[in-house]
Amino acid sequence: MNVRHLTFRLLQVYVAVVRLGSVSKAAAQLHLTQPTVSQQLKRLAEAVGEPLLDNQMKPTFIGTELYHAALDALSRLDDFNGFLQDARQGTRGHFSIGVVTTAKYILPRLLGPFNRHYPGVEVSISVGNRGYILDRHRHQQDDVYLFSHPPTGEHTLSGRFIHNPLVLITPADHWAVREPPANFAGMLNERFLLREPGSATRLVFEEWLRSRNLQLRRVMQIESNEVIRMSVEQGLGLAVLSEHTLAEGEHRLGRPALAEFPLGSYWYLVCHGNRRLPYPAANFVRFVNDHLARCVDERYIHNDLAALLGHIGDGAAGLSP
Image 1 (spheres, rainbow, N blue to C red):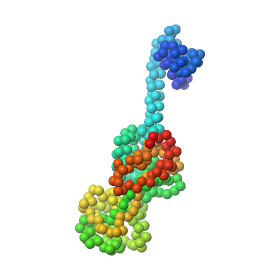
Image 2 (image 1 turned 60 degrees about the horizontal axis):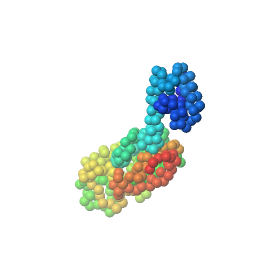
Image 3 (image 1 turned 120 degrees about the vertical axis):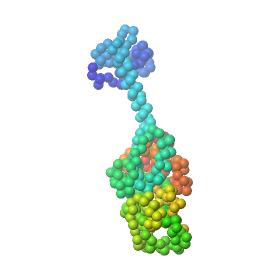
Image 4 (image 1 turned 90 degrees about the vertical axis):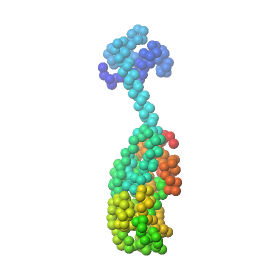
């Protein structure tokens, strides 16, 4: 037998005939003519090379085994059809997300509720500094990205959705906490702990300094928000960090009351505009847009994802809201 001659339609017709015990009833159920059903049965018997039905339309010994095999095959295809519908609705499947290190404090707040809503979706997460995630973005290694300083380019789509205030932190007993200077210029002699060049937090801070013609005199570079925070606690220097990184241990830090702080910054969801976004990834963006207030403190919400959703709508056609 050449299995390539066994088509889905042949198996479907055969199963209907065996179940109903009648060519005419099977034809009516399948919306076919009786001669067509008879011809399909003949083709199937020729493909197998053995009689499949007796004169009473009962399956032969070999016909019975083919009937069970056909049921298995059709059942698997029915399962696949259900899977396909779920996948097209974004309720099953997989997507990947690239996250800059600071955003790891935000991502669990988004993915936790999303996972409870879409338990059939698997998510792969890559975390690294901005240079690493930018490289992944350039090579289109992920479906969605979380940046605080998004890349640019005609094929990059982004939408800001969370305010990311950058705050000045000092040791808890620092003099500027007790008697804040008139402005930040009064703190330029302090040692500042900065992230590596290219870090979004450092980019925003340095751009702010240049706009005011200010220059730090003492700088130490540390490539970890946690190490910077702990180093500030121990009196090694001062720092400007995302407020989202300070939930743990904030009581051991000082925050001088300067009018210039916090500095304005935002978190952005970023996608590739020149490739189709997988259904589950598009559902993630929709979920964040629709349920942000459940995931994040309301004072941080600054949701402009509607434009991003407008751009990805065509690529994610058929999604349920």
